[in-house]
Length: 615
Image 1: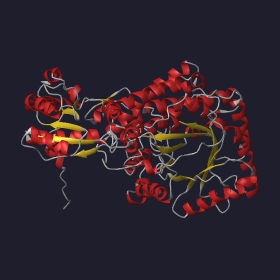
Image 2: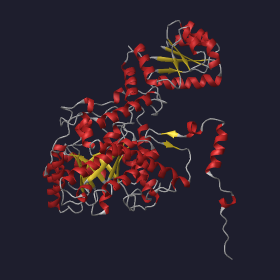
Image 3: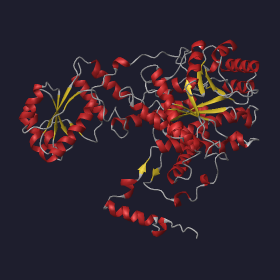
Image 4: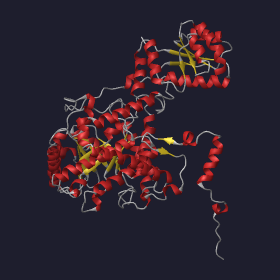
């Protein structure tokens, strides 16, 4: 007798989107759906709280398979990305020693910085490395890229490894222009063409860089990074095909080095959109091979959101970032060590960075599934939304003369600088959160002693630049870190006393809020369970030599407690009311001017207190 199988959900009637929406509207009790539940992204589009199959029914992105044009689902039929580690030593022998060591730890892609390119340098650098199994990525000053390419080709010819070599030379002549506002060299097209022709005999060597990681680290929004990266790549295609090269010759030499921010699903969707749009762009140049439209993408976890204080939280950020890139099907990933913001990474931080990717492979098996997000109503919709916004920016750049022109004019840098300002302002107001920095700081952590100076690369890349046309270099946490470092260097660390009184729930909640608020500046926090009277609380605060006394109670009780406390303190400490009570105007009329609440600009408020309290 055949087994009868019953489908569980067939017992329930189908629920339409309209029925779901009616239920949500009823539960919101008059609060506008769009205001309460719809998220307006920085990238310029709305994200709904729920998606259904009907939302992706007409999307063309769901029609292809992994490895098929336009490669939205990946350029390969597997998800075996390369784990890359940057070797920081510039001495060839020491770099080689370090490389051989990390290769025994599971790394299969290496990044080197070459100061003086020559065959002998490369022979020392690559000695003992199996070039059939390990990807090699070389960086140098742009002016030395051609010499490096010639030396590498000569080395590979003698070693008989031209056909098996995989890797890149990071030729990025826009680096000085983007970082320092310098002029782009006038001969970069001729240099790039010569570079491509030099490496013609090494099929898997990419030499034309699109380093949008620079934009990501400067604070660019996701669609900005993607739109500009596409314009950068298209500029290489246009200038070099105009110079007589074929579309296949150029496209197969371009490598995208892109950043990954902590916006988990958005970043996952970004790489899917990037492959799709790049494939469509390359197609317009009519390459002979469809494979030429495949994007080669290396992903690097961002530095923009990394912090000096509570630095181990950086591990949480870079872990989710690496996961976004892995699920998105990138070709290789660099996990930035958690301590890179204040010192040269050590063996421990580099090991943890490597292990983050091994966890994703060996524990989570993310390398065993191709495009696991494919078909997700949410991710598919995000992919198309990000693609649409990035495409608008791409077209705008093309209409204005191309990426190189906009970089030379400083327009790209200024656009990202404006974004960075917005993000720093959002950070100051806690609209963007960095745990351990502008929310839930470790009050008692001292970090000044662990900060080590970093040296310039020594190539004079900052000379003859224009700061007005340079990308911003401040991380999102920099302003708050400056506050805390100022506190550490002050003679006396300010003490903030929580005068908790009245309504139990409100005083505890506001004391916690206030502790986090002032902890962002590194002040000493003195919390309390509660006082019976205002006088008792003020007396205890004075005994502790408090510099700031924060009244924590309920709105209704502030009308009575605040004037009493203000009078009892008598100017011997800064007096602050936690909240924005209805009686604020009445309290201000009595001379009470300091209020902290969820709408406060935390950074500006704390700067003002630093100016008053630090000696």
